[in-house]
Length: 473
Image (cartoon, rainbow, N blue to C red; front, side, top):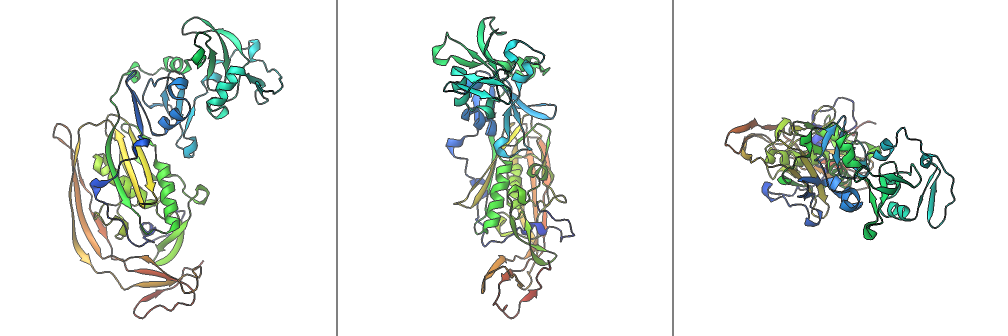
């Protein structure tokens, strides 16, 4: 996703860049699973629901069952939000935010006290001491056991600010009186009958689900999530800038959930991918010249995702090959997908009956990027036909271009040229009943690509090469 507006040789994007040397040859079926310590799903037999990826991480890092209770639904759509209900909270997903803020709790506590004016909700000045923390933001304090629980399980980022003082309230669940305190996202209750777990969150999540208008079917048990497919590509030899961009793009895709029937857009999910987002400049060939543009390496992630989607038998809506053969993807000819916002996107549709969860990660030591897709296995099978190459065209003579930013005497080979060729590939996806679900022609046409070198001051290009004028800035 590169921030360019002028006319560009269509899919110079691909060249983001083969600014490396050799790609790892990783067989399609040899993708390594995520480390067992980081299994991305957890199934609760008690309610028949899953928690996964970023929700699972948030849940387990902030108290788990003891704090939030059991999941009551899968991730479901409410308005413009994706949410998941738990007994004591409602989790919201915010893919528009950075990964660290992807999951948050709904302000159920604030909603519960709308229109209430009891004395406990009136601001009350207090002094901070060893057992009291006063919050001028709301004019309320947290004390003793509630304060200890609040601090131990995340404080403001998890529960929000206090909206009341402590007071006694009758529980809607069991009709018993408890000492309670409201916070923006939760209500805490003191249960003296359970000295080992005396502070609990009220069941605001269950109450909110009862009042949500959602059909009863959202509570129905579902199967455990299973691994649908994986794919791994190698980027050994990539320059530092490309490695940075690959890692950032993978992190952006990790944990995204695609609802049943929804179409996923790589460009939309990635977002701007500019310098403000941590992406850096890398080399590309633009109109036949060497140029630095922001975002080099992102096609590594779109290609890896494409392979996982292909293997899972999901509906491929939009896919474009690179203009040239990229050495990183040569382990399987014609098995790449380029992106170049806003002109070229990779899109696929979740045509299964359940959500698809994406997990993505990079292994810097092995120089690999991996995607794993999880969902409800409906028994579909994928058959790749090909790849078969034809119409091979010889590459041109090497190109050399001066780069004044390089060190004196330095030469970098940015492109390892490849012949042009046409690659025939197709896919047949069959359902559990043997009927064909998808029959796709996913062929690719690549132009010849010459070796491309950048050279610094003091270097004279060898005879027999084409010297390309440097890009004017």
